[in-house]
Amino acid sequence: MENKVIYLDNNATTCVAPEVFEAMTPYLCEQYGNPSSIHRFGGNVAAVVETARRQVAELIGAKWRDRDGNASEIIFTSCGTEGDNAALNAAVCARPGRKKVVTSIVEHPAVLHYCDELERRGYTVVKLPVNNLGQLDMDALNKEVDENTAVVSIMWANNETGTIFPIKEACAAAHAKGALFHTDAVQAAGKVKIDVDALDIDFLTVSGHKLHAPKGVGALFVRRGIRFTPLIFGGHQERSRRGGTENVASIAGFGKACEMSLAQLDKEYAELSAMRDELERRVCAAIPQIRINGDTANRLPGTSSISFECIEGESILMLLDMFGICASSGSACTTGSLEPSHVLRAMGIPYSAAHGTVRFSFSRYNTMDDVKYTVEKLVPVIARLREISPYWKG
Ligand code: PLP
Image (cartoon, rainbow, N blue to C red; front, top):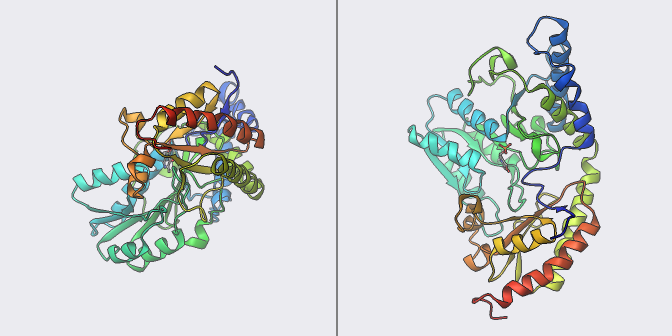
């Protein structure tokens, strides 16, 4: 067992950046006031929440400010899942006469399972297909979106393959029929440029722990002027749009993380892409019968989904783990099943490849040495597993 850790699972979660941690600590033991309190102990903290709101807004191009100079299109949430649920709930409430929801088959369960719930409540849910590169079927989208559609929800980028979707076109298609448009930008935020104003997006979800803020904080962008029905009712926090005392320390950290991501967006895009490309170059050169999944011409910079024919992704992960390398598989292993993920299945990846899929995802804290070390260990791991695989014909 190696003691060192090469963490290549940044699409699952990221470490809290030291600067983010520093931005959070004052609001745990010292300035622990409730932002809703009248006294200065609370008021000072309320100002911190507003600064974070501005920082989140700036990351995604939410430009509107209220009279105090704050961007109120941002609602803080507990996570990306809550943001996705809240957006879909608000969208169907804002279009009460419409009973159809259009989404894609490769969305995160935070969207798909809420859509299943809407189906139980009588909505028709259409899950649009993708092709073998994971690209969205835009013809199907244009066909399915109609005057009965309340909302179209298409993720900005897929968490497994990194494939980026045509958000501008999907949003325009939704608006052409009077439907609202939501995008789950949990994987995209902080990695690619986002401008909600330029694209005229109605709802956009972000999650802190994917961009070096802590777990348990996120944000939902809601375009000004859209009637918003909350998912969580309670106090008057977040202008009565999300009850519950604010997670101030995490919100402060989230704001700082957004500010840092925005400041380094281009630099990190280049660095993450370079690491991903080098990993794929080395893997392709050293290992036969592999496939790189997703739209390689249009994907997130730090995501690489690679299928190794005839072996199990879980076995690869376990052996890599012994060398301190952390990645994730393309199977629904968390459910205890070895079914390939719904994303790979939707892309029509053959079972023999889908089962042997590993996702490597990079962050600003990875280096080219991590890439070299990973491939150095990966090559014999694959060879060893293929040697004992009954399916490998070499
Ligand atoms: N949407 C996407 C695309 C994700 O990748 C994730 C998390 O993996 C989520 C939503 C859920 O975010 P959270 O873990 O903050 O609830």
